[in-house]
Amino acid sequence: MIGSVASSYGICRNGKVLVHGDYGNDFVVGAKSKQGLGASSSYQPTVLPGSREFAEILFGSLAYSGQYGLDYIVNDRGISCIECNPRATSGIHLFERDRSFGDLMLGKSTNDQPRASASSNHLQLLQCLISGEASIADPKLIKALLSRDVLFRFRDPRPVLAFRTMLKQITFEARSQQRPVADLFFEDLACEPR
Image (cartoon, rainbow, N blue to C red; front, side, top):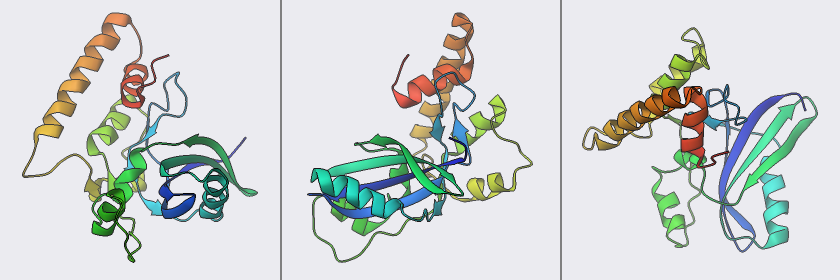
């Protein structure tokens, strides 16, 4: 299939879609790895026509309860679902700061529909630049870097420090195995060693 890749994240309860958000995959860690598509590093809300309806039909037919991630190929004929992850995915970052989203995660009823907001993993974006998977000349990169960072908080810098330590370990391991850093990084990120 030819087209761009986009994703959705959402939550269902008894087959009813309670939260649904779409985002593009402009910056993908591991895109150059042998693993496949990789994992998104930027979560910029968008609207994929037909994606929520697809999720409602799919999960309604299963009476599914839980979180989900859907990946699509998008082209001039519409969307084609290529993967379904019946679990939390990184798309959760679209909603993580919305109080009504937290209520839904706790199983509470709410009349407020959580709103998606832009965010990025700035350290993963840096890894994309270092590996050549992104270009500093890409105007979408500036937008991604100006959005909220999913790891860094001034009150708690420990996740950033741990991420740097992980990158050093992965780089060392990749060199010792004579493999591309992107392959090992994606294996660690996706928890899918091959």
